[in-house]
Image (cartoon, rainbow, N blue to C red):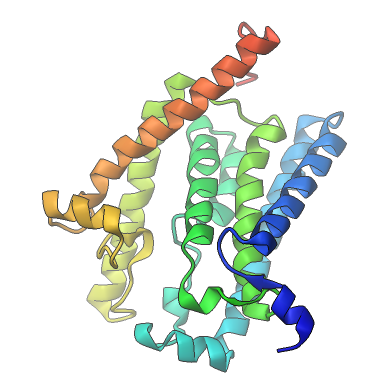
Length: 265
């Protein structure tokens, strides 16, 4: 490891972490300003293209992991790399698929799902990376892939609002929670099909089959010791989280005197 690599060591919430995060936020601000006078269709196209480009970047990143001996050695506790375990079906990276669908269909519940769930899931992943994604140089391909993908998911989720495609409203919460439940159940069924057919017996997207040591899910599992069902209390937490975010927008609008302005949808 050379001197530069030592300076650029990435771990959650160190200087490099916040520096990279600030860079991505700056990009979001600049692109939002550039699109401010563009029509809504142009904004949609930019976000859809960005999400699809992130999906391509994700595939390249995963391919690199498949041939990275250091990653596979660090990942030995999970049996090494397996393509069936690396699909974009986790809580955060499912946004790469959901955002284009939500934007093209222009459905509020899907846009709300992507805005509320995507950035939250990605920030959780950035805050609690596995040992193979921390205490190493950000210049390593696997580090660029992991942090680049998750930071992109954060800013693309936020872009749904900053591009003016969606304005959070309290009345969206019930439909958004229902959407989260439906998506979660669909992913749970994908997990079960993979396990039942022997395609991948460790399939656990959305942590809907096993808690994998997550301390919050462990608590819920004690209350409801059944696959998928132990996720149900999480919807209450998400509903409270969404209410807090909505309250922030409501207060912001009142301060600006825009509380009577209706959302375009």
